[in-house]
Image (cartoon, rainbow, N blue to C red; front, side, top):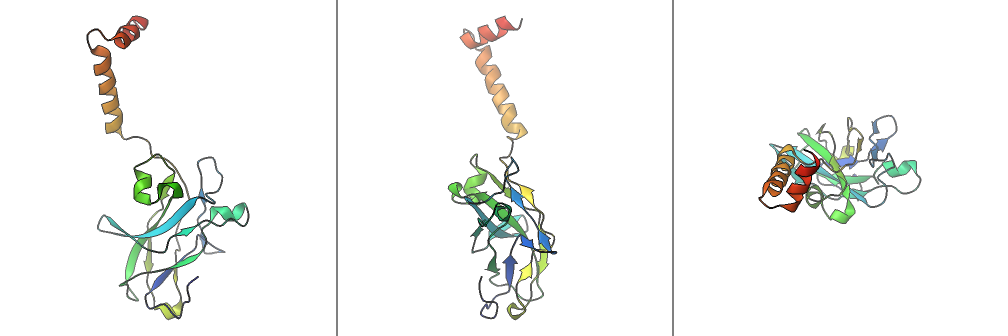
Length: 175
């Protein structure tokens, strides 16, 4: 972890488990922990935009239960001032995707946490903890209604083409 006294910017202490204060486990759809192979990063949410903060971190690997939680890291807030209120979210994605932006556009496990609002403080007082961060299950989002409708229309057009063998078989079977 970064030294608190040496930081010139306010910072967030990114830790998804702090006994009695933060308990935000991240799991896979089958209930197993995120563990090795996943990246976690913070973003500032403001005006419909997300600003990536660095450094990112990974998940603990020391025991099975530890694998639900990130390796703690201090994340500086460049330009942040003590007393400023900001809203952040934790993004987690399969490291194979190389970034969260790539992950949301490919069929890889990923998810963004609930938003958490924090008040920055002087770096000499230590990092802000993510009180209120909730755990979540990684997933691959379902296709949108528009995408499914487009797929359905395409299938109907394919089946209804005059002379389409697939269409003739389909309609002969279900008449």
